[in-house]
Each structure stands twice: as structure tokens, then as C-alpha cells.
Length: 265
Image (tube, rainbow, N blue to C red; front, side, top):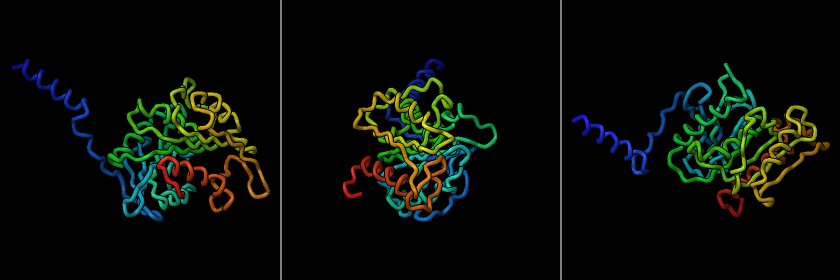
């Protein structure tokens, strides 16, 4: 009898691992949904593993933007909210992993909390075969590359493009970070000429690490200060400025349009 039960348990375990077993159920929200312009933001999970899922009103979704925030900006209702509402209006859902809880935060543990949030967020979206673009700012700009490099190992959808705004030095996140498996991915990397926080060190480091990405699929942009735009570290946060929107929003719009094959965006 005992051997029969062991055999039955093995069969049941294999049934769940060969792709024919049932998918994990969609998670339940862990807080109240919040209405934003053109959509709903819903929290899943707790602590540093929490993720906010922003979905357009009406349910029409053509793409997913994984947005990775700067250090400390752990809620989707800060300066980037207006940017997310812009993305919602263009039929993108937004995943916003918090990856910090404000209690015991450290750069080196951020990837582990990010992994939890991404797994939960994609489960919350359901089984949708949608193109994904990773976008990040500052620490999040570096984590966007971590996500792209580890997506397969984390069992989450890999991004078709990475949009990295003013990344910090990857040594601060993971001294052993290997991004050599990022190949068929469009990369746009921005640094600012007056950025005295991240400087160009992070951008230069990642650029030297991205040899596996074809030259025609990656772009390094130095954002130069003009009379209309001071290209310091906080420049992307001035979202009411039309020059800021053109400089920082338009590249992401184009990456999303390309990822989903739009011809008229």
C-alpha cells in the first residue's frame, strides 16, 4: 500500500511539471484598487514583494510595460503616475514592482524582491501572450537589465526591449551581473550630461557589457542640457514640461509600438 501511495504521488508531481498540469491560480488583491485616469491600479502581495498592476479601463491591452522605479519612489502614484496614465491610454498595462519595503532596503537584495513582484504581477495579468517592454529609472534602470538577463531563470516573460534612463553602476546591484544572454532585445540607454548622481558610470558600464546585442539594436544617448532642459538626474521627474515628455516619453512609446508591431504609432 505504501509503495502504491508513493507511486501515485510521483505521478501527480510529474503531471504538474510536464506542462499539462493546471496553471497557478490568479492571485487575490491585497488592498483596495485605486482609480487613475484611464485605468485601475491594483496591489498584489506584501512588503518588498508587492506589485501594482495598472490596467486600462475597458480591458483592451496590447502590451505590457514593466516599470522599475528609482530608489525610494515605491508607489505608482508619485511623479510617474501621469506617465503611466499616458501608457494606459495607449493600451499598455503597467507592472510596477515595489522591490522595497522601506524597512531593510539594500541594493543587493533588490533583484530578489523584484523577482517576487514580477512573478506575482504576471500571474495577476493572467495568461496573455503580450509583448513586454522593460523601462527603468536610476536604480530601476539598472534593474531593467537584471530582469532582462534573468527572465528565463525567473520563469517570467522576457522583455523585447529595455529602456534604461540614467542607470546606476551595476556593481552596486550585483558585482557578478552577467547580461551576455541579452541578444534579441532592443536597448535604448540614456545618460545626462549634468547627472551628478548616477553620472555616466552606470551607462558606460552597461554599454561595455552589452556586446551580445547587435549594434543596430542598441543605442546610447547622451542627453545634453539645453535652454529648455537641464539634463540632471531629476530631469525625467519634471513631467509637466513638454520638453521632458518629448525627451523621455517618446523613446518608450516607440519601443512599445515596435514591440507590438504597430505601424502607425
